[in-house]
Image (cartoon, rainbow, N blue to C red; front, top):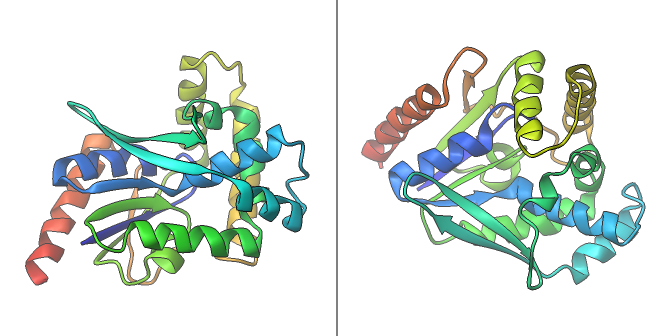
Length: 226
């Protein structure tokens, strides 16, 4: 069974997807981490994130691995480039600011989609991103679109960054999220949008547990139909 979760930055996709995967015993695949890892390498190589050929060249040389990690109350993906773990580095603000530009390129997305589809081919998965329900797993048994107000998403991001020691201002984050929403939803290749058959959940006023329980209930219904 495939559970596909889409939505804009800060809607809670990764947090919710990890919990759903844990509860169901499915593999969790964080596609955003794949684009972030590429962006991180683009930064290290001093490559222009708007140069498609240069970014694609970095991708062709990228030794990227996602290693599933199961803990007592969580599942996650550790991200490696070669032998170096970059799980924390790819969450830095500079990566967040440039990842939309890097992920907007046709050749980059085409290659990434193939990798993601291969990962999901022969096992039960929960996969989250921005084009999972529409492009990567268009035939997924359950499609979810998570959303939340820009202000709420910025507050969540603020707490996350401050907990990791990154000094940021709420107004700056609101501006960045608005810009990223615009870039993600207007890019020519696989833009962020709600699939027609996706269930939309507004997480603005919901706890993580409440969102997880709603998705689990939907998953049970889908499984019973199979």
